[in-house]
Length: 478
Image 1 (cartoon, rainbow, N blue to C red):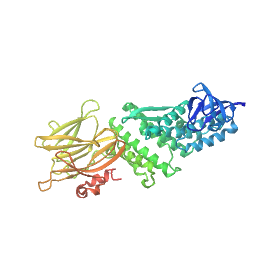
Image 2 (cartoon, rainbow, N blue to C red):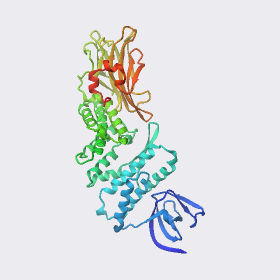
Image 3 (spheres, rainbow, N blue to C red):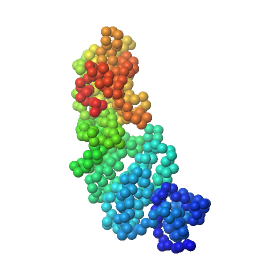
Image 4 (spheres, helix red, strand yellow):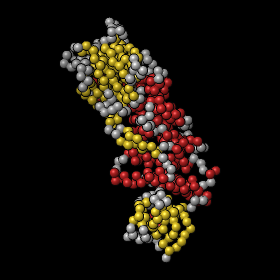
């Protein structure tokens, strides 16, 4: 018997559902429907519903138990929001949750709509983008692709671009922007600010000026979040995000010939305010990333006259000189060689941290921090050899540039003519998606790594020869 029902809307709730030509399990499949898709219900027959799918412009039958009929009126709006609230905290049900938010926004009177539905929508869209970008299991590819397509059908927009050899998907943040414009709770505002300031969601194709403007806006958005009423978990996340942004802004200041001291100090303050003991497992990587970003621009917080060397700067020093726009030439000088005839010279388009210049005691080598990118700091080693002076570069990692830093940690003198001069180096970088931190003993002659450890106390050379100033300034010993 075919029963007519008043035209209603239904949301697919199971994963997946076959749209069939007749009300029978053995009937031909017309299409496959996924959780969150909205269809129009026209008739009921046995335990099936005759429906119309406007998105595919196709009709058919689905089991009654596979969908949930929704009433789009003010009386049912609270129930729709309650369901969306439940699905918000259910990973894997993002598209279904977005469907219920969309239904609520249709059903609720405009004057009663507050920040919560937009906060819920933004959280689910942001989580869906993160799950797709992670791409940890090909078994879920079809399901994730269907969820993305369903979310887009509700007007939820996503941006995509390539980063580090893989595609990055990011929610465009429209709902989060609405949260910040409404009378939201402190928690809702904090989560919205975090959703709008993901570092991995900054388009790598943006130019330096556009990136700087965006990061300045992101820092302002995070600074507007009041930390007083937030749980410690969110305070930590806000501070970690602030730390990374202020480190990037410190580097940007130096590129515009402005002192980055204030921004650099702010980055350090935010990082030091993070309570490590209260970090979740999921937040640990975010904390490491924030620390490495701060580490890359660490020298911005120091005055130009600061020195980490034990030797007098009068024995060996550097002087910088501009050349082409954005280019800086580094000249190595001593008492007998001025800038008109330097010992050696090398030019770079990066930021040269003059305060980091550290000669060894015998004035046969000098270490210098040079930062070509906001998230990448290299160690330049000037060395006197048989054929004169040369400069070699130690990057944070063999693969890059990406996110990382390499920094001088101390000079190790030769031993009885059997071991040549060496230096201590701390390196930290993201390699193939994993964070690697090492403390190394390096040959000054070849820059080959002689020994390395995950902690400085596990490398005996660090006991005696690490620089006290390095130990005080570095973020690698957090």
